[in-house]
Image (cartoon, rainbow, N blue to C red; front, side):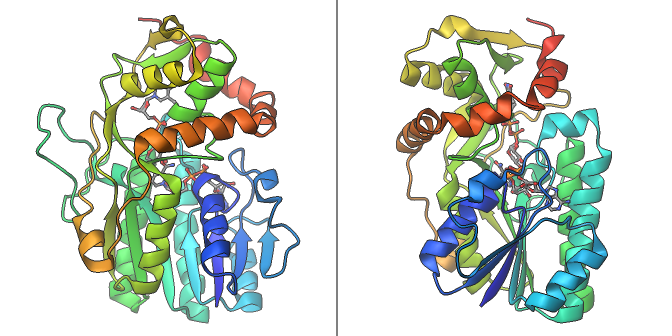
Length: 342
Ligand code: NAD
Ligand code: TDX
């Protein structure tokens, strides 16, 4: 079995590669990643050069390169993680989100049609459903919830989802889509809430919480997401969408306080800053379908997962310190430098 994993040098893609090497050691894994600011080859150092693994530095939007790779590898399965993934960046500059997330997905599926595959899996997000009101804890996103996006990021992901379903209906491409809630764990890029707060706290820097910190996210340990995708690509029904989440809703402010406690840092580091534009209030996944059809359940409780994650950032300072000492500094200054303190 040969699997092309796009975006495998990023957070979830790399964790998925590690999961698949353990779960299916006989599979050949080809990672296609153009190494944007979010891609990091050092993350894959433990698998680089090993048997049954190949890394190809090309963009999913590069039609010629993608078709050449399919010609060479004749993949059985394609799992598409490659994307621009940060909401704040999409608010600053949407264009690359449209190119990578929509056009790139179409290029991959065109190659799938030409060369034939058993499964094209699109890694989507719960953000395509928009948000839920904070005072209706009884409401959850199901696979039938209408798409209702807020940011250029989530709109580009929803656009890609619609294309994927259209390729299934029009061309009969055997596709599946997973829509997962917020992930956390090792190799999470330090522009996102949890790793940013860990890195800042360790450096005794202010912890910038948007608005009042009342927004709710539904957190899932990355390994649980990887197991869900593994199940979907093997046993999921073609043409279907599967929501993935572990019923672990938390307010941002509570997460940040928990990180302070775990690291022994004072809550006085918390700084409330100007809110994100169009900020989604609450995400909450109903994972009933994937449980019923594929038997998936999350295995890592948040209280354990966050400890493991913090331990990982303590043990792997080189990994994130290299990132935050480079181009990231300009990004940080642009996003947070002139931001109003509330
Ligand atoms: P990430 O930003 O950490 O990694 C993205 C990877 O894609 C990087 O390695 C980058 O180099 C690569 N990439 C970007 N553009 C590319 C292109 N044109 N060609 C080839 N490679 C390209 O993202 P992540 O957090 O690991 O997210 C992976 C996927 O999962 C995304 O599709 C995202 O929408 C989805 N998702 C993420 C979360 C989350 O909480 N992080 C939750 C649900 C869904
Ligand atoms: O500095 C910050 N301060 C802050 O209060 C940052 C970076 C974030 N936040 C808030 C905004 C959100 O309410 O924390 C929450 C989480 O923010 P992000 O980590 O940027 O994630 P989110 O916007 O929820 O999107 C994530 O989950 C769904 C991923 O980045 C997406 O790729 C995924 O699709």
